[in-house]
Image (cartoon, rainbow, N blue to C red; front, side):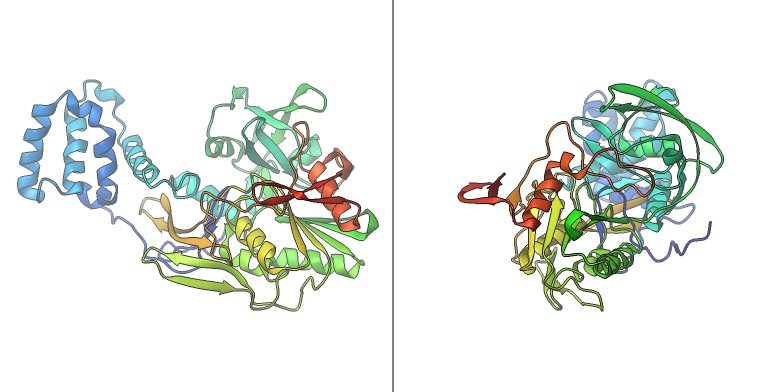
Length: 461
């Protein structure tokens, strides 16, 4: 499969959490044959911390080794020198030699270092295999079974979308199903990246995926044959009363273009109200977020403020094209799965669109712009290089976007799914947040200004 990927020029991609800058960045790579110090200098201090407990058992030996290595490689207190000593000490002295896996040690060192930065769920390390999955996701083309999932703290790995004409759709998988096993192996405690890697695979190969279906209280297993899945992040549907529901699942390549087409179609069909559903949207490319925001905020309106490590700030503004929502009433749906680029868009709309109301629950609060750095072996570091703020200058990181109207989703509900083929698993009335948005657009809600929670206004049925 051909791509436009060039290892000399990092390009932005997305998966579950990142908002990615489109600007070019230096490539942190390691040439073949480089020394251990050169290869892992940037990860030095992490593993030194990680093996502190082990170091206690070999104090005298480690001090001796450090002095010997330092005499040729530099001052003993330089982090990369300390790391080299720690690394070599483990290789030379750990009692179970067979347990030493240098690849796992290296991955653990990098992950430990990044964890100290506190940018949880955003800045992160990806192995070569995980990096390739990210590239596939950003292009909207991959080999798999045709489902989109997100992690739910209570439910587990929840199916949020089943793609049309996919193996999963043909087999009968439904939004709201919960993935519980892959080829008979319980995936409950596995990281989501590992599960995705298990489900994706070569075109033509088969896999058995087991789902728990809450609506029927039963477990179902489907044998699915992997094939190439072409995915649009956008779907839309005209609901009753000429209300158009636009669903954006992630900010991948062409998301802005596809949403523009959806809005044009909705307007052509006479939409009198628009609902933009960003629930469960993990984010993605900043350039796509800018294009999406320009559909809903006035020309030249601030979309977000970028803040660099030296304290410098730059306001990024909307550049409006031929398609714009105008004065059509708009509701934006957000929840605790709305992250990153989704927060840029919802925050800008909340601040700058007079015709819009943000409804739902507090968003994730990622708030860093990522850049990908190549490490030379196919693996990458996604590193937060900027903070982003709302147009009012409010920090998004660890705060999130507070909706104008707080509306929780009932415990037994999942967000309404737009189904391209067949009947949806449930109606909009069975999604409290969507139902609320519809009623808000129709003007049927009673307003209680004295009720306020978490800085957001509350309404009553």
